[in-house]
Length: 89
Image 1: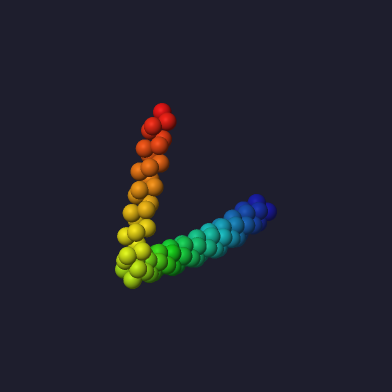
Image 2 (image 1 turned 135 degrees about the horizontal axis):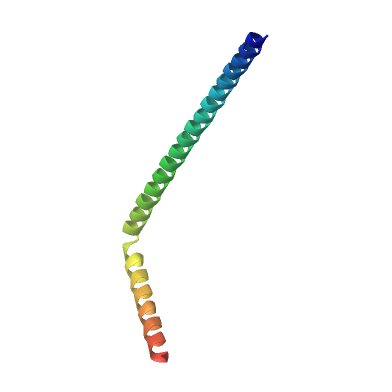
């Protein structure tokens, strides 16, 4: 009778080990899939940022006069605001 209990216990331990192995494998697969999704999203984000910078550069080159005037206006405005702030203190 004790042999039967030992055999059943060994069989149960074997089943539990196989189930744990399958669960671990499933978790590893899920993590691997998640890493793939993150890599894909990062690549798409990088491509979008590069495209945005290229388009912005082209737009600035096409409208060079407007770019220079706008930059000058922003610089003067910033200088006036800094001077005004320093004067108040």
